[in-house]
Image (tube, rainbow, N blue to C red; front, side, top):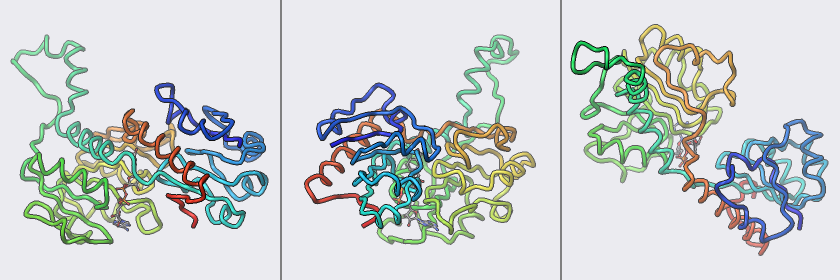
Length: 321
Ligand code: NAD
């Protein structure tokens, strides 16, 4: 059985191995595959099994690769594959539903703490001599913020939202959760479900943990921002298009939003023209919340388990049943 990995580099830049997948056939791993359909088709060749992370597999590609019986998406989100077309063509598509919950929650808190303390910028200032030349025993270049007693609004209270809440509660934050599905068992003295309006009005910090769908696209926009507290801070580790970036940029520059930290943007890698690159008090990281080695290793193991289950005829994590 021929197995082709179309874009393996971000999952395994060299610190993991593909043995779990390799045991099932003749494996070819491409670090990257150019997105042009003719290129993707050529790279797939006559493989029966393909793995993709971000390389698009639209109908026009799938129709031209009749050998393919299985697509393993090396991520949770599988919007890169036309799953309906795959189903028509008898191709099973699987994803990795959960592998990085704690890592993404941890990273959300890292961004929150960075907004509160600007550790990186202060450390840089010290290296640049600002402390050596300071007339006082200390200095700070940004307002420093204590979390205890403040409200953290979580838009999307699923796996990552709940894991973020646990850590945040340890810092003394009160959780305001907005989710289209509610589990009252998750509520406590320091965690309650609220409407989106309440969340916007009462949160000191807002962190996004909902999936990107028609109903959530652009959920942070000039109208929802107008309903937020002055000086609110916004964190996005979920998906870039949840935010109307020009609106967030305007709100940062006017001071309505005091700070933002985003790990994801509308187009990745980030375009030089992305307005957030020029916005005040905006921290941007290159989509790394998922990427600690522990999470990637878990992802790799689940990808191999998914293929094993497919081979024995009991596929799991199928997204186009
Ligand atoms: P999950 O499915 O466990 O939770 C998502 C929650 O959002 C669910 O509780 C769902 O009911 C809720 N939801 C759905 N539609 C909603 C709506 N319209 N309004 C409010 N809530 C809504 O998913 P998860 O594992 O917690 O992951 C959340 C998101 O994190 C993913 O969709 C993905 O975009 C993102 N993510 C980012 C990274 C990264 O590296 N930055 C890594 C993994 C996941």
